[in-house]
Image 1 (tube, rainbow, N blue to C red):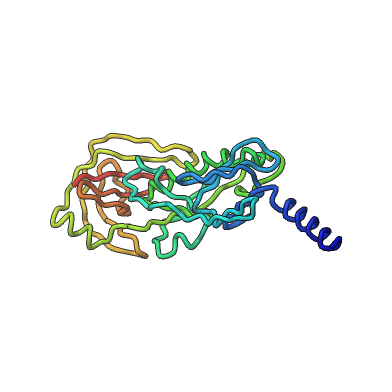
Image 2: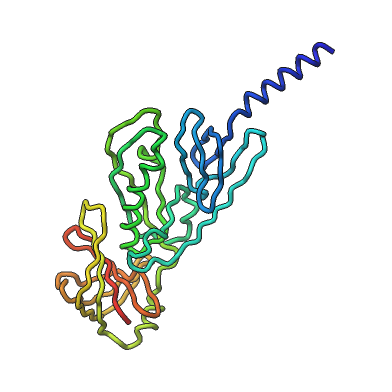
Length: 269
């Protein structure tokens, strides 16, 4: 009888010690925390020894084990949208899971500067570099970014002023095809262009410019899943090849790079 009571007491303390905190199981780490709250696109929590409220994308969370030993499986909620120009760059999804970009077209590499901070400010400090990555991706017509595990994503105990590069790869789930483009433009070769977005090399923001542009199509072709248009754009005589990144019933959008500056130009149909 005494032995049974001792075993019960040990089991009670074992479970109690195990269940003092909640645990978030992400695709890359386990986070011991308290006060888990699930909202539309994020899971909010506080570290055991911290006071700041942190957030992690629901798309990166596999499950949550609560302190009462019950668990909750988190289902991704993102919906990939078409990125037209740069105006809706914030609709771009950032993921750390390579499975999320399987079958999508690779657009290119992107990167941004990032400065390490203490763990209670880690999520907040990622907002600006993520925003820059999204703007770069939007210029190229991507709608999802794969950010692999790297130094900039590591949560450290103490503040670290090291400046490093946060990098990722931009993908698109719905690039226009050459057939769809040629069907929309039909036999027309000359178009007007009124808006351009551009981002200088090393800068952290995109600028918009209204201009009186004219665009002429000479030829179209497809390479590695990307559609290219050979043509002439007024004000950019040195550029002869443009990448088609988006197509609507009102306009199509082109990407090109010149002297380190990236451009996204809207061509009216």
